Image (cartoon, rainbow, N blue to C red; front, side):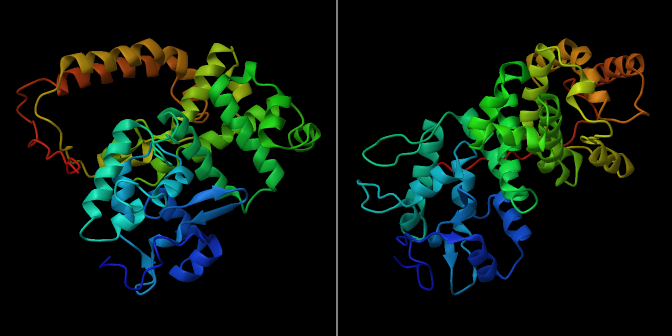
Length: 361
């Protein structure tokens, strides 16, 4: 294959660990983690370590091959990193090559991207003999969030405490506080039941710590965005939605905001990006005509959930948050403004956006 000079062999079964990647790239651990989150490098958790398939490293250039980013973009975010890593190293019988080998050759790169697009549409990856190894996309979304948090916190917390915290956060997001027992958390974390009391004391303390984790790290993808429009586009449907799921369960379980969030916990949401936009106003590049049914659904969503969620949002704004009645009035006016701004044939409509679509591979 013509483009593999100076490369780690795509058939190399020795995955690299973080220290080796750090040394190879000449960057910090934080920089490697940032690449993981930005999906410009492929890595997965194996116990307490993060491992990286060796085939993706260009030894001559001392860099990650750019084809990795292309492949991950086409695959989408519906699969666990470990599943993707296995798939890239699994021989496709019909082609007698692995996706990694196909990707790193100019003559077969399109085949690799075509396979990735097919796997994305199917919602499964193929390990061997056509057997699917991928899970449901929602489950993978949960996994990506906790995989990312585990990577970032691994050097900051004792392993057993981190395991408890991550297990609790995931279980609370999946099932709600009322249905999660401390014994189930201990079992999911793989630690003795007594350690939960050692680190957190009570279930309420564990719940508050888990929610703090979701608030702090669940919005990281948002905080990394520098403008409001990108922040909105890149976080709708992102895995930081675990916070919303956990709060929804808490509401159904009648857990008050004061029990769910520790005093002083704050979340700025999109505020930083919005304030920056308002300082230097620039219209978004959007479609010329909107579907009134979509707008209607959005308005129904806000109206139907605002009063229920508002106390859980306001408590994270700080003591100077507007009163509930004031927020209620402002939400109504904002929805009215949205209905007006989305009207067809508006004089201030921007040039139609050039919607980018992935090539049909």
